[in-house]
Image 1: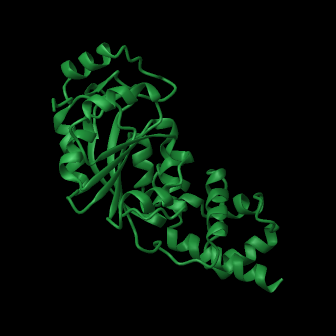
Image 2 (image 1 turned 30 degrees about the horizontal axis):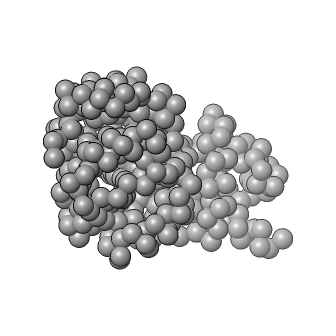
Length: 290
């Protein structure tokens, strides 16, 4: 099976099939072996593992995954890539390609039916426009995967692992770190793709926690508060929360912040996940008393 990870081989197969890159699908194919193996090694895959690969492209990463993993299910949205994948993966008998939009897939059912109880990991070179929806689908729907290794836009990766008090810290930071332990694997220059994207990329590992980082009485309320706090970043916490859809007036927010020992003039970007959780439980308790 000829290895695809080179500009020459990738261009040859793309030309042979008359494949046209889709801007709307954010298609950029990896052509650097060093980055390829950093992704594979960072994912810590063994023959005991099942892998869901999102966006296999022409099968460059899939070929190596097939050698390392017990089983690989590759989910590809572009039907024009299916005949290419049929050729490039013809010798990989532990790979199954599914033509589907991963956002519409029943992932619980897929894991139950395809992996026979194996631990499952996700690997993806994600189109930048669907990065957050795909990652949050796995996390919010509690899809039983132990980790996700994803190549994403550098700015998004920076936000995912940002700490309180930094410019990158926001609602995405809180959401990802609530469910995961993020770890950067490697930075990825534009030059290792064809066609070259306009932005730098990062490979990040999201190790999914067995239980969320903090316990809260109402998870939806927690994220309503987080969104409200970051929705108007320049506003103080008091003003941001009292002008949100939490249904509490300014005086009541003031009282709850005081009971939470959180100064009303602070901004959302300074709060830790633990402080957000405590604030959510205080608001939950107030609603229960009404």
